[in-house]
Length: 617
Image 1: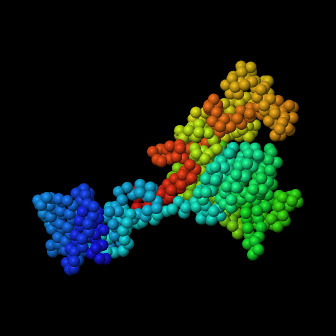
Image 2: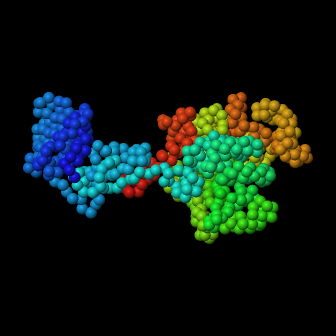
Image 3: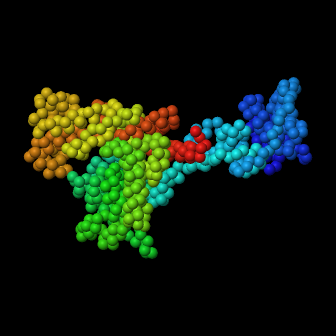
């Protein structure tokens, strides 16, 4: 180390001129902007000066800044410190210079004094790209720096540990990123009804992230238009996909959706609401299998399955049943070779543990569900000995960097967000709905009857702040359970329904409902004419179905009826974003949300690493 290298240590004082005089040789002089010596000397004291004078080659050091001059000169084993201001001597006293002491049995680090970090936890979180180093000072306190040199030498201190830079792209599974062509193990989930819009999917894909179009609940012509637009815009990109919603009541719709995806070359689907494998999802998966000329397996179609129950997860982690593959071959849906290849592969390599999410949810706790599915994944992998990797992701309740990091810390291969993206400018919903979401707290959610499974009593988690959907929809379900027909509902109750909820006569609602089902599925009309209770269900479902549409188009007259699928993650995000660049609604884009959450999670990973090394309390 040269004498000149001490100039960097003395930079801490911010002096206008620094002069180092060696015992032998020419002095080293450095000129700077100055203006900081007085304040810096009060802050740092003599420490950096003493560290430089510990080098036996140094005879003296002079710091000058305007009228202030500080001079420290070696005198035997000590030194003399003189401080002058406008030529008047303010301080003239001896100082002790401790001899360099070797650090026995410990790693040494020579920190750069100007890089001292006052708030290490804050720096670890806010600057995950910056490596930090913790050392013990003369009083055996842990102090932090962002720069310095490893090894022994002048200014060496015992190294407690270091926390490297952690890039957001290193969180989660590298194979997930490689398989799906993304820069981070992060997915924007498919929010039904086109809320996860084509614009949202395009923005994610063009930012080298993965997003899924919310095709569920949309008529097929609308799905076709959006898929065609995404396919044209994104070209050869593979990092995008669409929702494939299980539809046991209308299996033809599910099959036609798969036909559409195959037509436009959609290579990824987010499979949701499945209790068992359907011919449609298996056909999609198997029809993308082939072998290259060199015999290498090629899988063009990827299924990411959202599940909340282990028995459903296992169906996706296993190969499709032989009987189902044989049926598809017999019907010409797949080839015999594709059936053979599918028999040795999982239906889905990626399963997402869906915890307390918006919309359809079982309210499963992620800390219980995720480990159960991970253990299941490990067992299936051992038994099947697949040539591909199985992955388990996490979803539900993920709206802050700490919750994202918690999922990764539990071993999640990727994370999937939903509720928080509804407030993004690309979401296929209204400004009024976005504003309502941006005001939500984590407690502002409730469960109400699900439009698509009304008769079964299934529920969806929705925003309760500013909306009476959950309460009004539950009132309709209670009436449905209590009465055999609409005619049996007491006149005063019926009148209140027509005025407060439907805002029109129930007979008029039924007329419109009948016309809709006559075109979509005439069998429903025929059944309703024979079964008064079914007629009541279809009529009540008109309200449940329209409430989500009113929210998407921002019908202010119907604001109190908005059905906005939402989980507690939205409130968590709002609380975390308060006071940041993402607090204003207009600043929230799906990519900025993704980057902020993942960058913050990388910071949390660094704090956790520091704690495990005993570097933080």
